[in-house]
Length: 157
Image 1 (cartoon, helix red, strand yellow):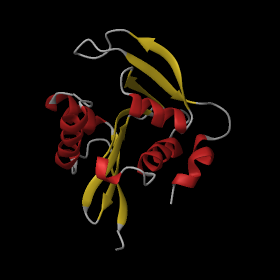
Image 2: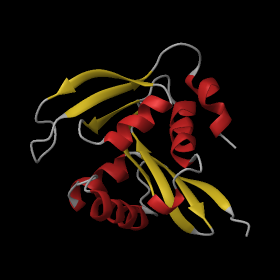
Image 3: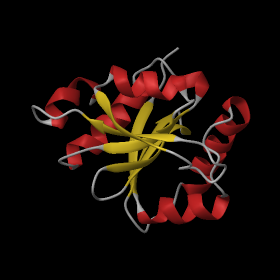
């Protein structure tokens, strides 16, 4: 069975796919207990960011919302679509447009931390009480060196 994978972008101010992104985020929150943003916060941040989206046969399976400075606000890949390089591909698209890429991740979210480490992110610092529920976060930055886009280009297919 062949799967048609398509990349789309909602530029800042465009919320064409915000409802699909919210639904995917909520699916992950319910299954894994992460991505616990309030709807208003999520929607406003999505509208202000550039959002890279991945679709399989017209179904949203992943997205990365990033500010103009390369800070990733949200990165989500549907559990059923993981292991296909989609997270790496989304980060690579953000890196292609920015000189640096950074994000926050819960200190307790081992899957996210393992993923970020796998593609070259480094922990810059720990922030106590970062999240609304009092949870701590790590501030992560994609390692310096050669061009980020060059380092991640294998994921841009």
